[in-house]
Length: 314
Length: 280
Image (cartoon, rainbow over all chains, first blue to last red; front, side):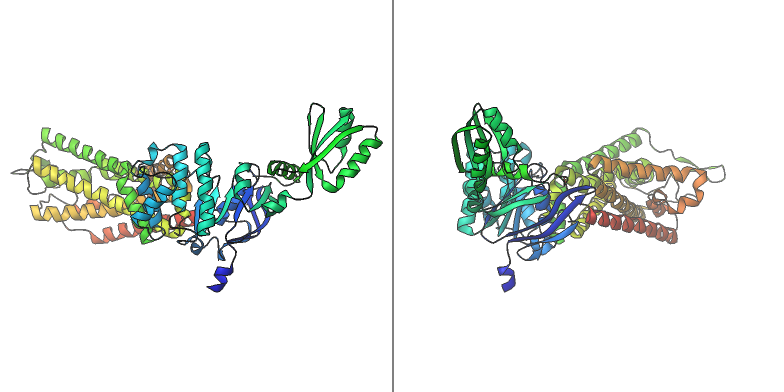
């Protein structure tokens, strides 16, 4: 029991999943401690949903193992009441039943919940007064909210959320974000979420992992990742064409773009003086070289651009 | 597993599909009753040696309506299996298609537990269809024709047998009970095809195709040696209930084959469900 409480919320060791010849997840290892809000980022087909499905026992890994609170993820104990709640992709419900009846039936599989708890969950996700409506009459956003309500019954210690704000309007997104923050800070729920909305992830997640073509590119505390040694640089140089040519040939330069005479690129902080020297030596007149810390979006783009292209994605 | 069974039964009871099945059976019973009202069964029946029996009194009774529905293949070997194929198609393939299988399996329920719950639900539906057909036809028969003896006009044994009202009810209960067991084998088969497919219509189509092919093999003389192993050879097991002396050995053989089909289909469904990734 003691060992169980010391176990990380999520642990993935050398996970690989192949769909025939396609490798969706490639030797992924990850550890999420209790109480963290962990953002799982990557382009479409990076292997995020596959990883979530492995954690929920929906998919068998080709190799490797994963645990939820120290319990093997394929075991029914890992999905026992109070351990994990999940929202995987678009939530699916029985359209011919009311929202309330759907919640009652799904919670019954976890041992049942009281009517008051069902109402609590409906209120929490903003579906107060809608519990008696058939789910077939719900909008996409309402289904998404109901999906979160079912994940919260009975109250889990870990929430696995795949695109939880997809389909929500801007107000709904803010409400969902605040709800997740509250669940984490007040009730200590560990949250593992994937999203393409980087602003949302940046404001919510304490930790991040970047995945591309099934491979882990980087992982760690959000603050550390954003304060890493890579910088975004704005360069004013004459002639800009020659500067572009030179920069595009250098391996340490990424995400090179041009806005009129301004060239913008990412590079390691330590490479900056070398780049400047090379430009001057080539006869390029550098009038401004302004480095600044990368935003999450720039970090994401740099990491996913740098990712090796050898492994097929899924 | 009991929790999963309770969830599955609640869903089945609230689904329109299940009620539509009972509704279509009610229509069939109504049509049969109307036909028997307009064209009562003749009192002269063909005999075994070219002669004929003349039966005094009333032949068209409530038990006869119920008996006719059990004996005429349109109900027990066509409509009921079709309804079951559609119902079982929804149990796994339908849930996969909607994405609700994924929702269910994120709960603390094993795949085996869920499969057993769905298998038992399909059996309950098979029993419900059979019981509804028997009871509704008797009820309508009592209203239209009143009680009376049962003359099994379509045969069922050597010579003509007449069951008094009490005997008739017992034989009908046995007949419908045996038919229900036959239908549970169809339900198990339907669940197996449902475990293979992502679309409920495909699963239902495969079940119906299997039954049609089995029925075709049963009537083609080239496959006489296959007959004892065909599922459709035993779906009319309920007919044995109307023989003068109930042929228990034949019934036992039929039940053994039906049980074998059921067990094999359930086992295969378990293997498929256990091994397939849930991607939808």
